Amino acid sequence: MNLKEIQNLIKFVAKSGATEVKLEMNDVKITIKTVDEQSKADTTYIQQIPALAPSQGASAPVVPVPEAAVPSAEVSSETAEDANYITVKSPIIGTFYRKSSPDQPAFVEVGDTIKEGDVLCIIEAMKLFNEIESEVSGKIVKFLVDDATPVEFDQPLFLVDPS
Image 1: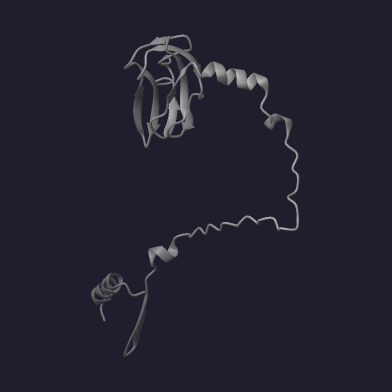
Image 2 (image 1 turned 135 degrees about the vertical axis):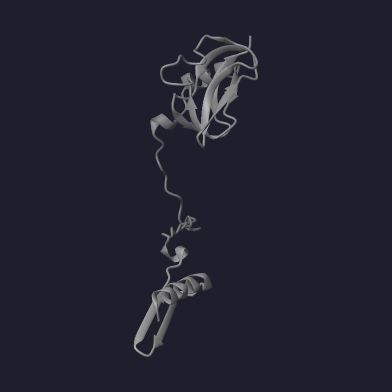
């Protein structure tokens, strides 16, 4: 068997999908093994552990609530103030940027007056930079996201005072 015939045999075995072929002829023994890409890839198993329901005879354990988890009057008054504002939310998942490049000024600052169609920020998604335009007119009151941080769909970005 010459080199060309062996190469053709290897190509044929690879195309056939066989994982192993052994060929014995007079004084020549050839074994061709192919590796399936799926078997070579790492497999991740995710196991969900079911939550145990408390038994009928036993009472549920009492877990103390840390003080930080208890809402305070300050937090509720702050959310009451925020209710007067319009929340600009992220239309896509990506990375939030306040400016077009590090050496450029931010699109908007707190206190800036904006109108419908003004660019507020950029959200990078899959190497595409998407300009996020305002759908409302008003004054920027607060940034809810830090520069160069990931954002989710429908995540609040800015508070705008429409008055």
